Image 1 (spheres, rainbow, N blue to C red):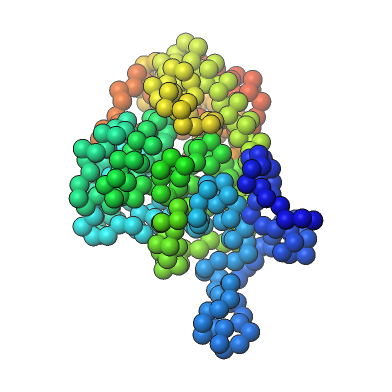
Image 2: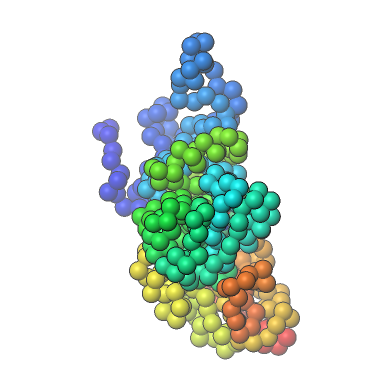
Length: 390
Ligand SMILES: Cc1ncc(COP(=O)(O)O)c(C=O)c1O
């Protein structure tokens, strides 16, 4: 077999073949799942100089290397760390690049636990935290201070799906010397490559589409050349390594992620368009819909959409939202997304200070799974009927 070069291959080919080379492990197609603390060295000189590729279980193993290099291939990054959850994939880079006295700007429609981390631990560490309008674009310039060290983005925003002008934000922030981070979980690197748009650090809850089966939590953080050494050093310093079985399962999930995402994308769009036309629905918050205020930017920057969006009911309050959810038979009521099964949750944005709406009625987030679309529509019809009768 000759040396293969996949850099110009299609995305499904890269998903099928990136990460590990079967020739490194007796031709087995998949990499070994290495359970390890101790790694033996051949002699005292090698141990003194740490002169071999693998040195200890907390750093890296052939299993973590396989996943990290597959993610690098997809993200176009210089290096990737694998951490125990998507939330850790947010907190570790923030801790890596922020110090006491620094100022951090965070989009107001950020995933709630990111806000909580900033408002508790970052504040306690003496970091000045400020939330900004997700639609600010190049206007972020107004908020930049001499001590602004990190600008944190997430696009589309959690639950309400505001699309950020990432290239404009990144350009402005970097001109002022800030590190630009993006939680890119929604799009996956298949539909948006943050580093190509000026972002320095790309964050993923691999729990979602990469894992794809709602059976584990894991995170990845990928950095460009300039920011990789510090990210890696923080990872080593904090000892926040993950279990090999979960790492392996995410690599396994990546192999089919392209196909799964195609289906999530198609079904979610079909359901979103159908919902838009239903009585009892005020709006559907899905960036790939022409009606979405962020559609033009989404269309310019993203190459696809995933399966999570929200629906705004036409009037009513908590009682109507709960009646909708309680009537569902196929959609499960529970957090997370990116798995094979459909889910629904009520959206609560009372923590926000800027991206607060207004919304015409209850906002419900839907994750469209791999089920048959007609069954999902019938389930949502039950929900709409229950909300109307509540
Ligand atoms: C946008 C986003 N980022 C990060 C996370 C955190 O991922 P995890 O559940 O693996 O901690 C989530 C989880 O829902 C999320 O929606």
